[in-house]
Image (cartoon, rainbow, N blue to C red; front, side):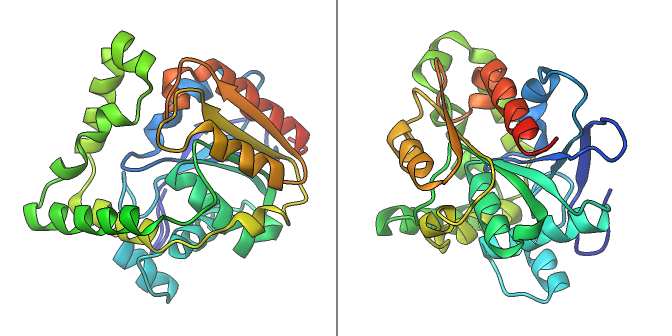
Length: 273
């Protein structure tokens, strides 16, 4: 469903009425579909919701979302406030919030800006630090390129770099899935998100104030946000489980979804779901 200025919100699993939902925030440059392999494997009858972040999937572009919220963008803060507004409009007052990569940046901003909403926090293949100068400049170059070309070709190489070494050799189907999902996205959404990530804040200190159940997941072969970054976040969080997923890179939910499903189910139970 969508409302003015809100995001497309997808009910991935419909659990019992009133159950604490798990809200999953996708990575860049994808949409909510990246979670389906994992959520299909979750035990029991959880309620799982997955929004498309601004400019991705069926959601409005970032500029329109920021304007509807009365905010300036591009920024991770606009994304976080849009997630919170979308959940509140759907009647969700409290949820477990988990995000991968860009979705993790948004999840950290949600817990900072809307702490009452967050019953538990999941951070998958992400990092709490800001981009160094070189990475920031590269994001801005990519944003300019996709707009100039009116094409997402500049990010299409991510269909392989998101995957770990094992998946690149043994799972060509995953490359095809990622290519299809990436090419479904619009250049304006990709450019806006790149600029938002380029200026994001370091939220390491925020994690130290998250006094609720937390989960950190990382692929053992993740080259973009490696296991050392995950361990650093887990050490800062007061109550975190750390799960290192074997034979997986940056896209743990599609490369090796079973341990991710188990970990998210555990987080949901620990958080009262």
